[in-house]
Image 1 (cartoon, one colour):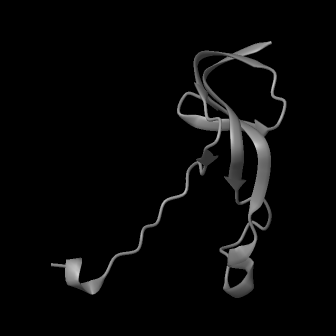
Image 2: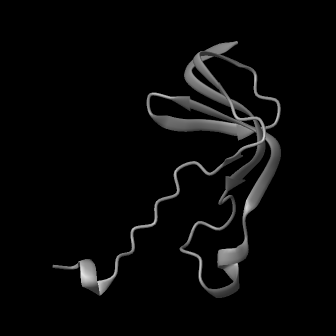
Image 3: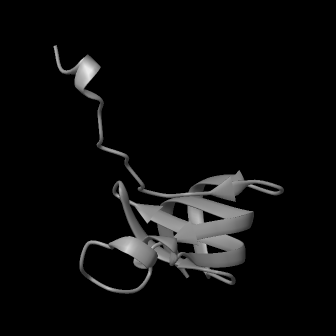
Amino acid sequence: MKTIDLLIKNAEQLITLKGSKHPRIKEEMNELGIIKNGMLAINDGRIVDVGTDLKYTAEHVIDAERKIVIPGLIDPHTHLVFGG
């Protein structure tokens, strides 16, 4: 069994953007990959695996029971008023 830095387990929902490799537009923005009772494996600061029954040992484990996990989503937008 591979050892990783961080394992997040038991997430009620793990939200991913699995699918097309291009920026999403219009209706595509509603397409989410939702994994129920999801697990997220992180090593060296990078997501290495997602799923429901991952087989890793980890230095740190977070139990995300009754939580929704949204890894790596960044909203880079701003409003003109904050532009200086």
